[in-house]
Length: 369
Image (cartoon, rainbow, N blue to C red; front, top):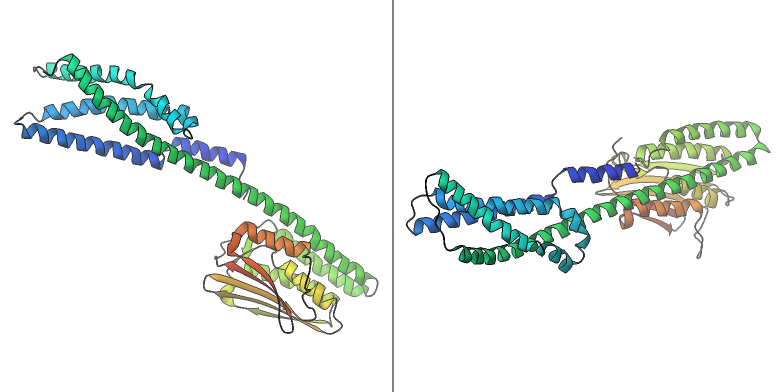
């Protein structure tokens, strides 16, 4: 399934509509900090002989309310400052320029609320002189803002890094799927071109066999159209595709090739890239059967070994050249494995004592239809 621009836009919109994990952690720390401040305030008040518990609670809650107002404003305006996250000093400077306004609004708002609540309760709120209060609260507020601006920067920088990572992964996935589609588009014409060449060669020497071959090719084409839209298929379906291809080739080389299928039942439910093995079997016919005057034996084997899937195609009648250029089919297989699995999968060509073996090793994954 390809990642489209609409998919990416929807993902971004969904991300905006929900609270991010870093924000959840930030809000949790904010709440925990104020619960701690409240506990300390009440404890100090009681230790000093106070009996009206509502007073320290009111003091801390008013500070919390006004401070939370400024934090909410920062969170709503954070997108405006996101462009500076890669320059920490500029980002912090853009926030600290609001500090004078915060100080000038924080002290009057907090103390105004306290005076109002005390008046409603028929009490009088007494404190130090306004000059001392403004100086003392300003020092506390500067330290407080410095702490939380630093924390918020860390959380925002982390969130931006995570978002950029998700976008990069989505882009990589999109590019990988585009590359896979291109590789499959290369493979199909190559595959049928070779099959039609086989039929063309037979038309001049054995028309009935060419007709049977054409019928087999039609069956193979139907199967290819049925499974061709899948990027991943099961080993069982992939082997069925190979059997159809082998039937086509056996019509041409009826007396010159013998095939054996050694299938581990535990491997048949595994996942494998669709049409990955056909070029390997095609190579066995091309380099083994076509070039040999003697009967050639081709063995196809699939087995599961723990968390790995092993598939091998061996043929007699040929040897690996010391220096060889890989054809379109083999190169296509390597590139698809690289795109889908990276270094976790490999395709190897090995010279055995009496045969050449093409082996594919993949991470085991159960195929889900």
